[in-house]
Image 1 (cartoon, rainbow, N blue to C red):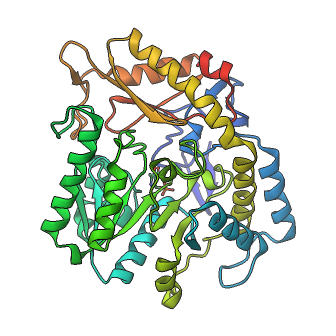
Image 2 (cartoon, rainbow, N blue to C red):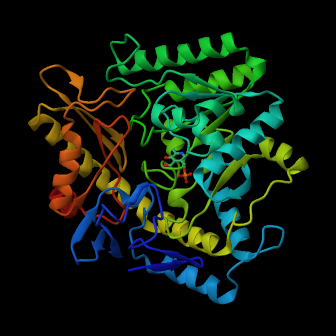
Length: 430
Ligand code: PLP
């Protein structure tokens, strides 16, 4: 069969549309979704424990969000960001309301990667300083700048030659498991890891650093929450050395960790929050930066940045409806059901030697799988060289049994981030 693609005759069965999905080899084509479930073209049902890609927080058929998108499409599908639009204004107001009290300004973008790049641009301009601190084992996106901010070697190395463009400087993460810090307690780990950040700041030169960009709970790059006291100490350091603290809430935002924003579980206020994914529950692409009045002042002064689809009205309508759902009941549901999920995962840890750590918060969890004989991961954590890694077999096996899981990077970790509409029985069954 030949297809006519953009006026060109193609001899392929279908066009190659993306680097993640190869229609020649992967037959998993999703045709339907309902609540916490998705269905493939053969009608097979899967419990979606990964919220598609950490984003469909409200599940797959939320009528309130669908109605909001439809209403905006009927009214007017597109309005540029130099013109006014009610959905956009209403969502910006709502975001300023649900964010920390000092937050007043919102700038929209399309993807989380761009949101992080925007936040970094704002910080560098406001502080007139070139550098940004980020962690090894972090994920901040895959574009030119965001890839360089990322500390997950696979992504970062793909943009290595551009790494200096962002002024990114890496520091070590506070991971308890196989930690580079010699600590006897989580508190000591938090203290040592934060002292290391101060060491980096002092050696780089505080005046050269505009911001520290960090995920409240690291997501796809290793799924680890911070030890107690760590974020409070980082906030103190940022205040002491006059550096903006930017929380990358692309995964942790909008209820994923049991509060509207993940950083709220750490009792600190950042200067900027970047968001994407859950803001619309994946119903339309939208991202952006919410910022304190102090940062907003600099941004308002003279930003002429903009993207055609930033703050798209249909996406903003989806966003407003999704945030209403989170406020109305979905975050309460996460708070109620997270202990059940944690209990079930911990019981797996007790049963299986290969599970050496289970960690997370709210509805964002990681299962670490290692070789019980050697105490080593099945995968080299930097080069990701595979030594018969059983994690992929678990993901495949789960899929055969109708449950979708994914791996984190490095790939000795299983990631779980269910949609908030999952019920307790479904958690236990999974
Ligand atoms: N930041 C974090 C924490 C993420 O997990 C991601 C994507 O997974 C991004 C940024 C990049 O977002 P996007 O894929 O929308 O560019």
